[in-house]
Length: 229
Image: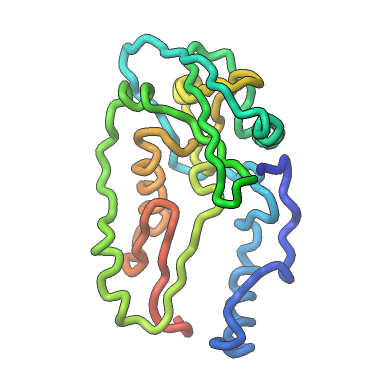
C-alpha cells in the first residue's frame, strides 16, 4: 500500500549489520554514516520522493493517434484493496486524476500470500508505439566479475526508485491508466514503460560517475571492498 505521507525516520529503526558477524564499533560507524544522510531516506510507507535533478521521462510516440482501452474487470474481493491503493497514490500526489485521451488498463497481481496485491499497468500498446531509447545496460557477468575477491559487499535496493524521475507533460498524458474508479496519470515514472529501465540506469550512472568501482543495475547498487574504506 502507499501512504500519503511517511513516518519520520528514527535512528532506532535502522537495521544495520549483524551482531554475529560485526563488532559494535563497526555497526556504530555504519549507523552514524547512514544517519548523517537521513534526509535521503524514506520512512515507513511510500510518499513521493524528491525529484532527481537532471533526469526526466519522456515518451515519444511520434504522430500516433491516442489509444484508449477499456477498463478491465477486477475480482470483487480485490476492489477495495485497489481503491485503497489508488487513494494512497492520489494523496501522495503520485497519480492525479487525468483527462488524457490515452488510457491503458490496470492489471491486479496477487502476491504470494494470496492476500496482498500489486497494481500493474498494461502498457503493451503504448510501448509498441514508443521510440526506443538507446542506452547501454550493464551485463550481469560484468557486475559479478571479481565479486568473490572482496571482503565486504552490500546490496542497496532503492526504495521507489523510479518515482524520483519526473515526467514531461506529454509523458504524463500518455501514461494515463484507466480503472473502475477513474482515469489517472503519473507525475513520476512508473514501472512498465518501454524506456523506464534505460532512463533510470542513466540516472544511476550519472550519480555514480567517477566511482568506477561501484557497479549498478537499474535500481540495485552494490558496494564492495574493505569495511574501513
